[in-house]
Length: 391
Ligand code: KIV
Ligand code: ZN
Image (cartoon, rainbow, N blue to C red; front, side, top):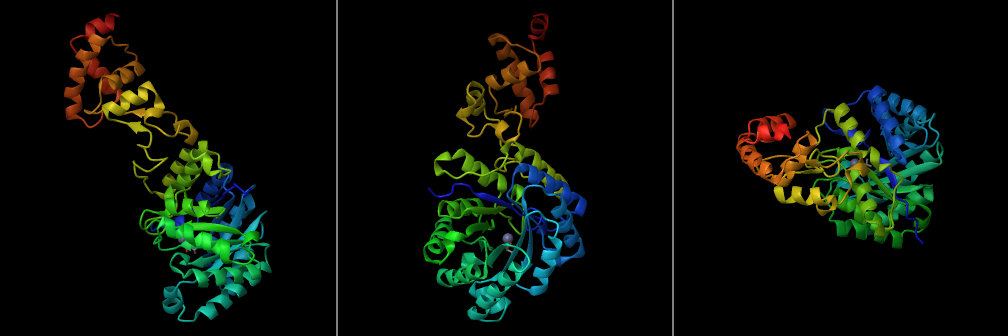
């Protein structure tokens, strides 16, 4: 049976940190790297060592403290980049050099102003050189999403011949449809000599909101590594969100694909990254947004109070959220009010609830959300308060 384990390659500290204004210092990167290691990610891409002395130092320090994960450093297909990446990774228990080159027509023609054959040779040489420093070398074919499959297969074959252990197929511009991205993985599986000896990796950007869907389609079609970031942060519209792909695989066990992630840490690490990077997580963000387990309409609240699974497909505790939230607004019904009133100490009879509910609606029409203090005030100013207080 095919290997069902999907490796999680976290690039929060490299692709994620490329977000404008999100620069982290070494100390912050160490805090996050430690938590990523505890979370159970298989690979931490710690940075791009040649890019600055600060990034070099971060990769070096992260290499010293990470206990379980492979630590990876990015480079271009340039000798000096690769040499510096190897130096930065010298203390890592499990070092990996991630090297590569653009393979789409647009990269070859406009960025490198060269030919397909030249790029093929550069790819081979880069992997070969990286191999002289470390055993584990991942090759990326930048803009693979818009690269012709036949040529991409030739580049992949060259990288394998040079010793690559992992082939990264980035949809750098977030252009592919899930069906196209899945078909690309399938094509490579079927046409690249030696592919059975390496891991295929998905690296998807979210320009069309398809990064998560594309990564899932990638693993369904044979990839066994997903490159992703906490909260989906990254260049432009971001990268694949780690928490999304991990929970999709967990909630769909029939796919027979699993990860090593301790999912109960997801919410905590999401907050940690958001705090350090100063990037606020949108409230409706899947899995870790403030509203991911909040219910505010009367029909939904009634359902969740009776049986959580009527409107929730994930137990909030599985991702580290203590409980589902019943949010009181003017759209809430009696069931939600009774539930929240009980939580702050009032057990209301049906008749009392009818009375208090009238008062509640008057309040709720004036205020966006009713908090616990408001509930006390609503009950204390309702006609039946004396009766409730003396019960
Ligand atoms: O999006 C991309 O192509 C990348 C590569 C450098 C791996 O981030
Ligand atoms: Zn990227």
